[in-house]
Image (cartoon, rainbow, N blue to C red):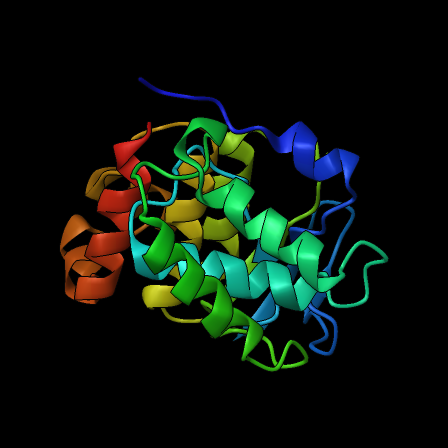
Length: 208
């Protein structure tokens, strides 16, 4: 049975799960987007697409990000963060697709607490970040991504940005859609599709 994410629970407790880059400055910024020519690792935007957490590794990464983003939150006392981790890990709350044993979850939470919350978790590089309420639909976003490609050669980071925008519109990601967005051939996309991108594409498509 599929469950919708209980995002309201997070919002009611003022849990931070999105953050734009703090130190990196955009090469171009408009009312609709920020473009980082060399990319940024500082953009975090959890739970923005329909895809759910499907692996232990991904669940732990989400916990680390929440621990980092909420380190200064008035709710970020240790018992609350543990409660948050357990809430995210409970399948009925709609964030994960699997059940996790109490022992594995306890070990994961302990490992997260042993990390330095000041250090940002390893993250994917992003080049284009669209602002909330930009008013752009999928076609508009992909058109902008395609235009920005002219400023740099096609690489796996631009492909990832295109994949994210397609997924956030609740569409299946295909090689042809990526190629159309970037204004290149499907062969070019295939050439830059690393194993990690293929895995990400599959994961994002699972919940669409």
